[in-house]
Each structure stands twice: as C-alpha cells, then as structure tokens.
Length: 327
Image (cartoon, rainbow, N blue to C red; front, top):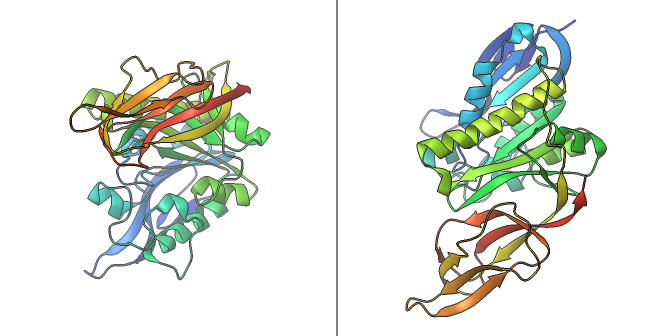
C-alpha cells in the first residue's frame, strides 16, 4: 500500500500533491537557500521518477517542462510517484547564468556531485540534493539545454546498462539519439549510477530557441518525452510511443582553433548524417579573411551548435556525435 511521501518540507499523502522545498542553508541577508519541489504521490504502488531542471541557471526550458508535466498529472490516478524540481540551482536561475554567482569556488553544479556536507556553498547544495535523490528516486532525468551560448537538439546521455538504455528509449519518438556516457561523474545521474540506480541527461534548446514559440516548443517536447516515460513505467495510463530506431555513439567537442567570427555552414542540419571531413564552419578575422576551417572529426552528425558568433581560441563551437551503430 502507498504511504505518504516526504521530500524536504513537502509531504504528499497517497493520491495527493504537495509543494515545498529542500532546505540547504541560510544566506547573509536573512533569507535561505532552498530547492523548490513538487511531490506527486500516486494512489497506487510504482516507481518514483525524479525530474531535475535548471542545474544550470541559463537553461530554463526544464522549468516550463515541469509546469506542463505537473498540469497533466492527477496523483489519484497514478501508480508510483513523481518529484519535480523546477529550479535546482536557484541563485544561478535568478542571475540567468550557468553557475551560482554566490560561489566562485564550485561554480558548475553539474560537475561536483555528490557534493560535500561541509563544502563550498554549491557543494552543500549538491550534497543535500543528492541525499534526497539517492534515498527517494527509482529513476532520475536531468534536463539541460545549450544555455546562453548554444543550441542543442534532442539528445540523451546515459550509461550502457540495459536498464538505463530502456529508460532512454522510453523518452519516445522525438529522441532517437542516445549517446554513451560510460562512467558519469559529478552529476545527478552519477549519483544514481553510484547507488545502483539509473538516470539520464536530456538536452534540448538554448540561445537560438528563445523566441516564445521556440522556447515553448522545446518545453513541450521535453514534457512529452517525460510523460512518455511515465506511461512506459505505468505510472500513468496510456500507450507509450517509441522512436523505433535509435543511433548511438559518443560526443566530440569541436573547439575553435583561432579567435574571430564563427560562421557555420548555412546548410548544416541537426542530426543529419555527415561524413568525416565535411565542412562545419569557418572562422574569419575582423577583415573577413579566413583564419581557420572546421570539419567533421568522424562519420556522424551534429547535435549542438554555437550561437555566439564571436569566438576565442579554444572556445566550444560544435557538439558532434560520432555514430557507432544502432541500439
């Protein structure tokens, strides 16, 4: 029989939802650092699916996706539970930047899990979050996007464990690219991995998709995939759909070999097959002279592209998937 589910200050009885927060610490101005949560506790038994958004503060697509998921769910008709974290990294979200502006020592939250109980501020946030996550979740999905500097198309990162691949495939028909992250480290999915459980990182959206229409489309696609996961694991009723064909491999980060103006090839298409050596972009100087040409490192496809045309040597330009085969 289902029992009440508590996460932080939120306790939801079977068949009910509750809002609350996971306390982290106090702040100098008299306020507090907390992680907002929505707990939806089903009337029947089933897995606990945990959804984390805004690990990076400039990636708000997941916040709207959580709102859309919450609006679709009726705990009285659910089997199992869902924990929504619409904003995990609140200080970064408030500043609309990647990391916590209050903490210059452990800036990137997605690199420091499981954190430290007596560590820097962001490490403490990671520690508190990972403790609740590890003790509560059956599966976890971390929502990311390209943030302020880039756009990423529908891409999943997970381990090669069969149960993790099943979770990835459950994202549905819009998510046919599943890349290998053999040994995740520093992230919420890594916490799940170390606990003998399974998690995903899903990527969609970013700077070029910030028009109201495109931003909301990304959020709807994210929410649709996660609702499909809930159908797959029978948390909610309905028939799940699947891509039917999944490609897999690993990512390359294509970096700028020179500083200047980044000009991507105008014919590039996300997740369209490309051959090794195909042109990706040029970098030109202030006079328009070509300084460098970027080409594909292997047979595969692009899934992420830089949005800021001005570029420094060593800056990220493109995320490229080297395709090894199908799943």
